[in-house]
Image (cartoon, rainbow, N blue to C red; front, side):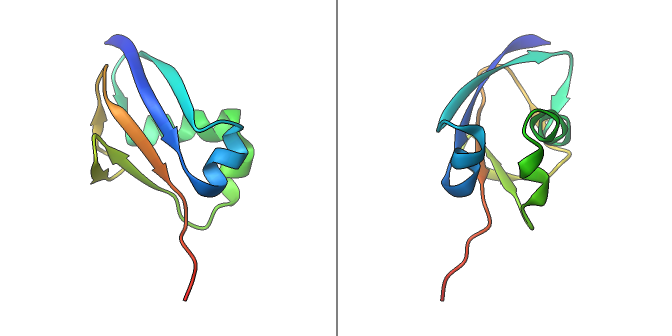
Length: 82
């Protein structure tokens, strides 16, 4: 499959990526895991986050969740506070 997805970054992930939104081209079949691996390869600092959640079209997703052209993916950084 080919096409694009919109990636939204928040908090520390926005700082690491240098912007709050990215358009990413998909090549072949994609999943959250393949996207995560690609992002970490391009932005190694992401691997230092103790947890990083993903949402696909507004719903939390695990690493096996497929990604399709036109999807909106959100990077949800670790949350701290009290």
